[in-house]
Image (cartoon, rainbow, N blue to C red; front, side, top):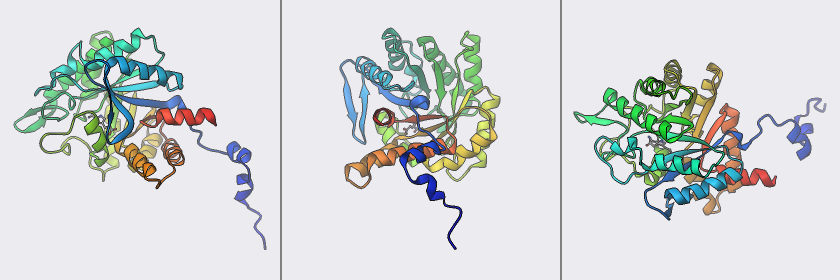
Length: 324
Ligand code: PBG
């Protein structure tokens, strides 16, 4: 008795496989994360993230030109300020690095969606995502500063603001601040389910944002919780989020899938620094085929249900997809 059902029939040639492929990777949903530093002519590679740089505004704009030419629609900006203080004052400065970087993109007339990460950890001397009161990260006082940072990004010309701090109520605080200042058309991409993850390690080198005491467990989510992620997403949507994001991506594909099924809004996923560095390190040692690994990882994030993917691999993938 031979099988009637032979799934292998449709796997015989690349033409057949392509026709029945369920998930098609495209650059349309990609967002490329970039780090901006003060000064000019600066382009320093991040040790733990080969191929990713800290750059001054001039060099950053040059790379944005390349990103645009590769057909990647969007960038997300992280700023490393000149000086840090207790309250992260430079986050709201009209002449801060991120604000000047946005203006740089605008002056260069690049056709890119400019998203800004809204958080205080890169700007505070203690490296926490909010202000410290009585030895703890104080929720409500932080909201005022986060809303002010988002407003200054919008004033500088940001297309989308993306709060990543995980304070309660920050989406509502940012939404009302933007609306009061006539930025009602600037969407909020909320890092809604952001886990307290080991995979942010390389980013903290890149953004010089490691907490100087303690950790982020009192505000970022416990990796063991998925139901809580759905609650966080629901709250952010009630508060006015336009897009919700799960972060990191690969260890939380189940969460991406559940958010996709439960909510009819665009879903983002952040393929974070540690996920990038693992692949880079293994590939450098000849332990993984980088191209195949990256395409498989990004396909799986899309298959889990993410519409938008923030990834440091974006430029490489765009090049590979063009040659295909
Ligand atoms: C800021 C922020 C972090 C990341 C994005 N925004 C780091 C953190 O929470 O410590 C991580 C991104 C990455 O690892 O690529 N709060």
